[in-house]
Every structure is written in structure tokens, then in C-alpha cells.
Figure 1 (tube, rainbow, N blue to C red):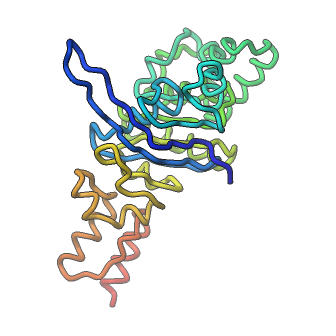
Figure 2: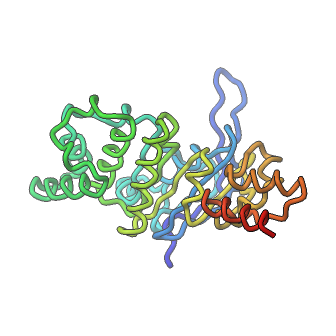
Length: 282
């Protein structure tokens, strides 16, 4: 499997204001993301999640070290557009990404700026809307849609540019539970069915549990890295850095403190219920 993103010895410091010292976020960050995988990045506020995400799309450039996207140095100004064609970004507030008064026109905005021919834009827009389950809203006004629907339109706009990777920076933070579910199901399907690499920045453990891999950041370093079950069973570690495990894991962990002997691998509600049933039945 090839590398989509590689981060080597990344350092980044936000500039200070009015002669105040800058704020260092990373001093020696190392990370790689394999093509075709679904990676969730977790961490408490201020750990550097969004800062890291912005390096994947050349929105921010390293103060030190290197970031490569599909083998391209993100600091190479001559290849900036290649980086951004390979990695599409979806941000927290969908209203900030919607630029047109009609859904299909909004989805067409990105390809138009890439200079794609009109017939190809039409094909891409139709395909992108179909992939996010929003084809029947093509002629609707975006501002009349729900938050989850707006975010799916934002994702469609990125898909229409045909990136190899989509980076989503807390895309469900402003959504209700239904909207959150719609967005996560959409990106999970794009990963599984289309092979698009997905990097999901989130603070929702249930969303991260759907990923192939979970990376936990703390104070600019990787504190944990592995499958959801490998990471979320480290309950004490997560607590020590201000995070919680998924509710199912937390429940099993608490019951174990009262004499139960439950596996912490039960991430889904069904797995958790079955584990408790089997333990009680002994």
C-alpha cells in the first residue's frame, strides 16, 4: 500500500503578535497515512489536530521538517495546486463553504476553478451528488437544507474535484446527532466503495470507532496509534490526557472496577450488551 501523506519531523509555531513570542504547536511530529485508509485523529483542545490537518493541504507550511502529499513537498510553491487537487478539505461550518444559491452550482464551483470542461463538470456534479445521496436536492437552495445535508453538499463539492484524499476538520461539531450520522456514514462509504483516503479530525469517540486507524495527539506528539480497539482499550491513558473512551468501553471499564471481567474490545452497543449478558449468565 502506498503512502498518501507523510509527515517527517514537522515543526510549526504560530507567529506572535505585537512582539509577543510565538506559540509552538509541533516540534518533532512524525506520521504517515496510507492510501485508501480511513484514519481518525483525536485529541483535546489545543493539541494540534486542526493545525496538522491544514498542513495536509498546504494551508499552513512547516516551520521545520517536511510534509509530503503523494510524494509532493507541500512547501513547493510551484506544485501547490497539485497538492490541493490530491487533498480536499471539509471544515467545521458548512455555511462557510457554500458559495452558490443552487446546490448543483455550488458543487460545480471547484471543478470550474480547475478549468474543467463543462460536459465533464456536469458529469462530476451528478456523480458527486449521487455519491453523497443528495441527487434529488440538485436544484434546491443550500440555505434551506439541514446542517447534515449542507455538510454532505460541502463533501460533494470536494468529491467533484476528484481528490485522492479528503481531510475533514471536525465536520460534525455543529450538527445534531442525525446530521453527524449522515456525514460519518457518507465519508465511510466513500472510503469503502471508492477507495478515497479519509482523514477525520473529531472529538466524538463513536465517530473515530468507525475508522480503520485512530491516532491520538497530545501536546504536539502522537500519544497512541492503532486500530480503534487497540487505542480505546487504553482507558487510563485516554483519561490522563483529558479524553474519554467510547461510552461502551467506559461502561465495561467501570463494571470491571466492581468485580466484572469484561473485555474492553466491545465498542459497539451490540458487542457491549452481548459481553455483559455473557458475564452475567456465568
